Image (tube, rainbow, N blue to C red; front, side, top):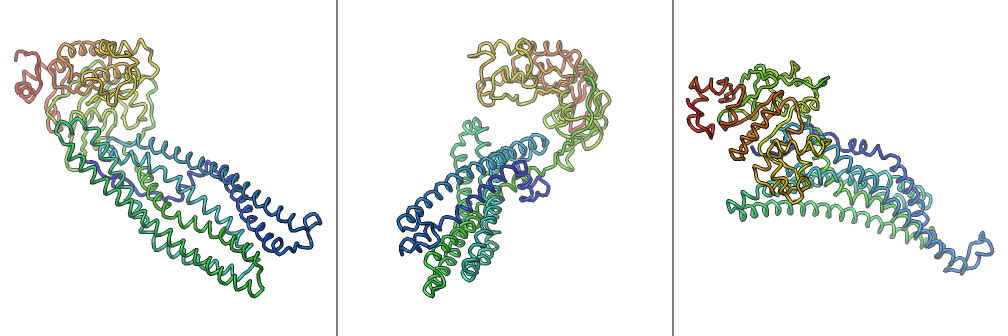
Length: 603
């Protein structure tokens, strides 16, 4: 089944800004500290031009103001004060800026960590149906890259707006007191800035989203091709895969270049408008100096304040492009968070360890509407029974056992364990009752003992070794370089298929759940090993309800009952001898070699 963009699988997206504010709330104390630091930096920005004014208006003309104390009435003394004040202001401003940067970065990084954790937890809760349709590479990109968008939005969006509003208010008050006409002239560029923003917003947002989706496509291609590298090499498809990767990478590059072009154009437009405002103030300010309405020092102070005034505006508008890119990224994260898990958690837990009696009552299920996978399934499996499920490929065998663990929910009917509808149970309570050996065997890049103890991490070394012995895995584990401490490669690549299979059987046996599900548990081992594994399974599952999907004769011969599936229906059931005696569908499977008989049995 092909994967599809996650956006097509989700509900309506939450709004971005309220989500950012909600994520920022746990760090409100640090945020207030950051604002206090900004207020201090604003005060220092306001103080920066005054040493220059003193130098221009009092030191250079050698006309100290009369109100100064005698010790500072000399131009040389006043110059020393002005220069030391300038150094002090810039030094203190640098210290506060470093402190402020650390504060804001810490807030942003913590928000990213929180969002990643929340998104990862949410993905773990989504059903297999979702993960079957979704692109793994796209999900990885959203978890690892798109989550950084919340830091950009908070630190380049929310924080600068609040901080700049504080600074702008102070600047306007001071400038208005100095010269109302020039202040009004300086503010005249604001409507033009807002106009540019509205014109470019849609283009920036669309281009940013396209760039992120193209980049996630690159991740998806790499994940898919690397996980199937053996097939790629076996069929000598390296040139085709490289060409496909280059095509995706080029598309991503072009999308990002378009995004950077629009971001640069937006920044250049705002820079030009702000420069026009500064030029207008300089033009008219110089004329007001000539007319004696302002001193040269006043004009320098005003121009410095104007730079400080336009600085926050420049920061807000010039980073708007990156903020829109981050908005697109966070929107992709929120799409995932808005996806409602198809499997709803129940409310009941087993008060004691269940016996494990499983009952299917008129159960039907389909992956796609109008294409039933299972139809009207009815049977009961009691503790101590080994139930074999057989049938041709696509008959619904793996789907049937997946319903027991609620990887999917039936469309009709119900499944009970000890008389309790499994939809009423919490997922944790249900899945602690069931353990599974799946195909293909899944092994983690951890040590051997961590792989076996994955479902029961508190198990002792003796219990782990006992499970490995029952699964006929102990001997090959002992031959590994560090034995049970050997760290396996990715996907267990350093082990054979049969060895990986035996590790997963040991993992299932160690968990010791009342219900055991085995999907082709011995498909990759030789006959002697299979016989030993089956004998061990029969010994340790005597009181368990065991389901096994199998084609091998050695497995189904031992079953208490065999369910024969065809076209999603149970067409026959009974013991091995009973089914052969009827000479029906099971008999035909057996005679045509679909049961892979290692041992001939009289018919």
